[in-house]
Length: 303
Image (cartoon, rainbow, N blue to C red; front, side, top):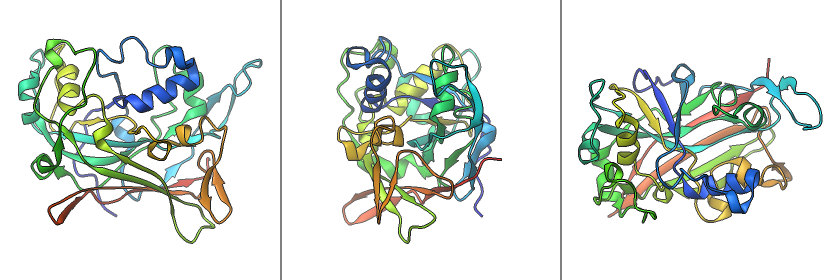
């Protein structure tokens, strides 16, 4: 068994894919209100649970909690029936900052050490009932898987691409012109207990992100919040413009309204016990690849 690549003191998860945020917004609020008014103005995020971040290969227990599947009835307690994955990447903070001293965006890259793959496991039915008004809690904090190898930013710089055009233009403290979006091919596969081979359910790319890592770090610290070496900041679900690039079962099944075909008669709307989910990713160019190693976990039954 591998070990976590660093002792993670704090963990923040952002929500920085416009395609993902739009898809989820359409499902829950309708097309007219898909993006909240603040989404295009700042990198939305929340503080996650560092203690339940585990290395690739660690099994994940199906969580239990409160849910309200029937809106006409009171909530119930039970095991999640809508266990999901989130295709994400995350970066480790190298050098921190002092409390009260923001990291300016011009120097943000100096504080970003390297990146890993991340699966931010999510219990959608628990999350749907609990998240208003303060955001995710038990629907997220039961487990987050990362790959064991940290790929330094120096290895990724050859694969930098121009940033997504941001309209409206962000406030000055979030503006930077240097390319800090990366062409990283990303894949998600699922292998059920009865399946001989895993089925690829998602092909996405980190370049689809709207907010950059430099913007995330600058925003995180602009109020004087201090970050420390080993802190982990995650991208949020990475979805692209096409259905096969959606980075969650929630989107792939469109809130459970259709099945995801795994081949051989196997289908899913959300994850079953025994399912093994594996995230992989790499950059490629000039005859070589930079890989991230697997980010895998298998679902154990609820207790």
